[in-house]
Length: 174
Image 1 (cartoon, rainbow, N blue to C red):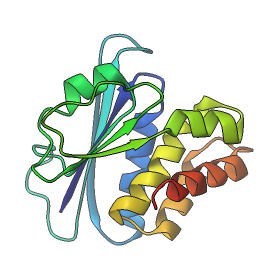
Image 2 (tube, rainbow, N blue to C red):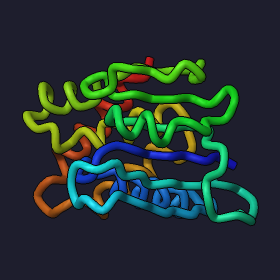
Image 3 (cartoon, helix red, strand yellow):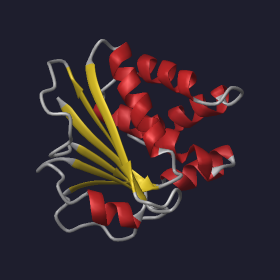
Image 4 (cartoon, one colour):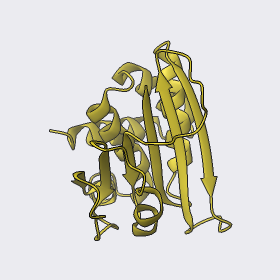
């Protein structure tokens, strides 16, 4: 079983990538639960999506000790990385996160938003870049399933640039 928490600011598309990850797990014939929460601000406040992916029945629908936390803002890092599992991975977007919590031992610093902006012309695709990095790192879902789920969920006419964003994210993981 893998517990993932995707966090950042409202408007960064974290809930969308949570939904995509859960859908990809189902396409891989795994079980998945996806939930989300965000502050009262529609944009700018800390938000998170949580996904549990498992081969076996999931008995509790909330992430309690995430194996992986994606933090795409400093506020989200401070708020949502506190209960990272011992040995778990914290992925931070170096574009916005400067202070890494002392308790996080396995930290992956990636220029997620910077890559989206420089390579795709818009920071808007940072969520899909992050998703590619997560899939490449965790192997929680197959590349085929996540690609299919991305193409199913993104706005019509943006399929190719989103596929490129996914590939760029995968390329961030050596």
